[in-house]
Image (cartoon, rainbow, N blue to C red; front, side, top):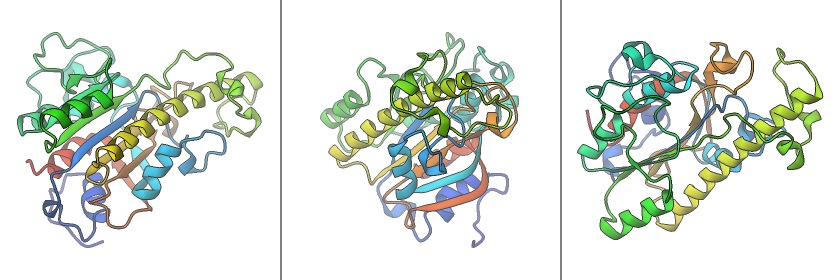
Length: 307
């Protein structure tokens, strides 16, 4: 890897996405990229087909990995929803955000967040379902993740953009509450999953109830993957797939003992795949470097040509 003149304190995510993964590509020689950030609620590593899981089916994630980059060692700032999402939005570790370091907290509206910075720079921004939170945003005049398209969806967001300003770059937060509990008991097995093939963490009791519960979790992971697949299809229909940086990940580990809310790999390590057709010149790569989703915000800003 050649040395790159970037801030010494910026994490390897920027080096990975902007340098290692876009080797030979001058980002200013292509259009200002769109950004689609797809994040699941409680989806942990290594529960995706691209990581070798034999049961859960994640064709959208696997496609992003094969046509982009798969990250083996991606971690969040804190294994809890609000602080993890605060860190992603602000590019600040959760312990720098005052009450924002806690679950069911808030965020100081004076804290810059990347979606609003992008909107101020001319991007169209939007969000779907779960983005920031949970907590209180009553002091915010604009939602930190963008305008709400929960009822209408990503398709409506793209249709409005195409009608009003089709060349406008966009940044969209595609969230979901999957695979957060509660589950429909037995939904995974009923969908055709074989619970005997599930690879349990060693700390889990090897019992049919546990295996069925994990299968229910897998079922909702697959539902999130289908949501992302629909968004990819919409991008293709509008001819925007190649100039869109798609990031697909989770906010922390699965909602099981020793996972979510714990600083073990099962709680703090998450799936991550990035696809950017016009920017990543050597797709299908697997990166083993440690990276943090806290550095997504400065990465997105740099992709847009902002400080």
